[in-house]
Amino acid sequence: AQKVTQAQTEISVVEKEDVTLDCVYETRDTTYYLFWYKQPPSGELVFLIRRNSFDEQNEISGRYSWNFQKSTSSFNFTITASQVVDSAVYFCALSEAAGGTSYGKLTFGQGTILTVHP
Amino acid sequence: GAGVSQSPSNKVTEKGKDVELRCDPISGHTALYWYRQSLGQGLEFLIYFQGNSAPDKSGLPSDRFSAERTGGSVSTLTIQRTQQEDSAVYLCASSVAWSGASNQPQHFGDGTRLSIL
Image (cartoon, rainbow over all chains, first blue to last red; front, side, top):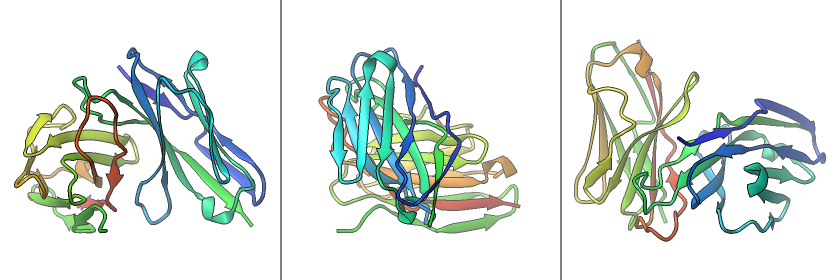
């Protein structure tokens, strides 16, 4: 069975601080996909990034960066120079390859509530 | 282009009533998923559609829950004889054609907040 663990329930930082959100996953599959979603107060889940299990290159997009390490089954998300607009709930998610019987359904972590104070 | 549209945004109903929740996916997206978000259980998968067929219903919590999709587009999630534990936000997501080669991102609607009195 798949499992995603986001051990940090809530994080509070002051604007301009860097913050890292942890994500640890469990799966028996050799091919899988990892995702991060942002859920602002408005409620809609916003897609941020997708990585496949064969690509361990770190990725940077503006103030966002992701560190994927298969050896520790982790896919951590760092926000550099945080801003108040980054305040949201962040979800890490895992899916098996859609060629299997999971049809790409997402298994989510419990989410991390990030609050950025001015 | 329009995103995933869900209606109603909010639904309050009495225990024992039936409810229907609607999802209109992004045009051209053939894969459609329903999830439920509740305080105690987090985000849970309910059902998956590819076109009009539902090859994965493994997440439906009981036989009171059913869903259909017609014309490969709009989907309806029906909950019969609602119970208080059904109170949650029901989220619909769609993605481009399901491919064995890569899992395309799922794009979510704003959800329907269901409250059972």
